[in-house]
Image (cartoon, rainbow, N blue to C red; front, side):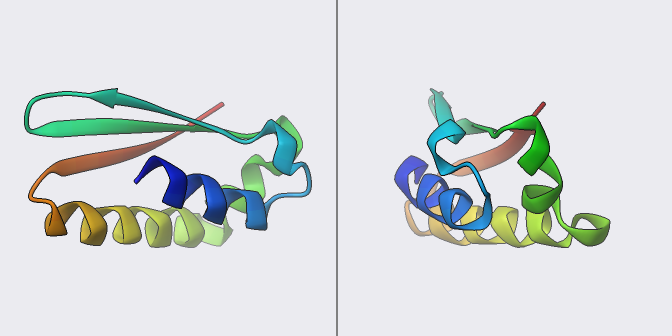
Length: 76
């Protein structure tokens, strides 16, 4: 899951070397923290949050397959 978000985020931004994804794992759920450069935050969020919603939909679909709840947080 972590690698999936990292690959997608790197393709969206101008500075792919500053993309990092941290996973905080729990028993039944996990949290993915996506960090990008300040200049690229708008590209990851998108107009009216549509890109961020799409990323969260992908994460939810992939995590449903492994029967684990995953939350994607985009950090400043």
